[in-house]
Length: 311
Image (cartoon, rainbow, N blue to C red; front, side, top):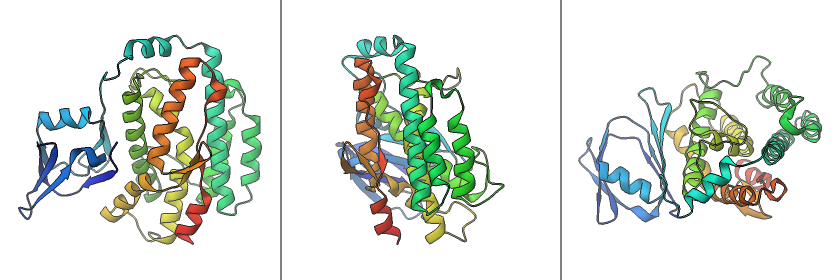
């Protein structure tokens, strides 16, 4: 796996030559070469580029997470590898054969992990409501029958952004929601890549079910990662972009940088976000193949790293 995050904001032409990506920029006729195996994530942050089919093919074959944006700079598409795993059939059969006990217990544990991480975010920000979220985490039941996730979310968002009227919405254009949507899309693209590389089919989710959503499993598995994104956005707004009202190039670059930050702890070790995503997906696959929901390990927020970076 590579280690570089490539963020393309200028109009350009992209070609592959000798296992290298060649970028030809139209505005100043410059050229940049990047070794394909060094790239882990590629973001096309404008619509004025040209790319060959061979390049798209090699990006997929190299398992590079690739995200495209639309004309209003909203993430709109993900390029993922397709059926490259050697035991694809076995894994697919395991996915469609999962019993309701495994699914319900896995979803319960995912929600518990998410709410615990949300509580950690509020505690880091010295907000008293952190204790209430910890109590919500203790009460989450199978199937989330009491809707503890929704109740925790209402309290969490109101507390974190200190706005009685704040609503977390996909289509909202305020700077908070726009930044959250952008960083979530980055995380989602990486999880989609790792799910596909693992041989699992992203359409078969644990809990999310929607005939229009081809990434149900991706949306399930990204839930524990949302709070680390929330804290990062909150601190960027507090410390660096408190006067921002639109998604500038600098903000986008900072949001993409989350991938290589050691903001998570997983399996008792400090990890970058992108490494933790890969490990979590692999651990979910292992627990799924064994149908053992209790063996799945979850990421926790490395608050020490946040403190050292922002304070």
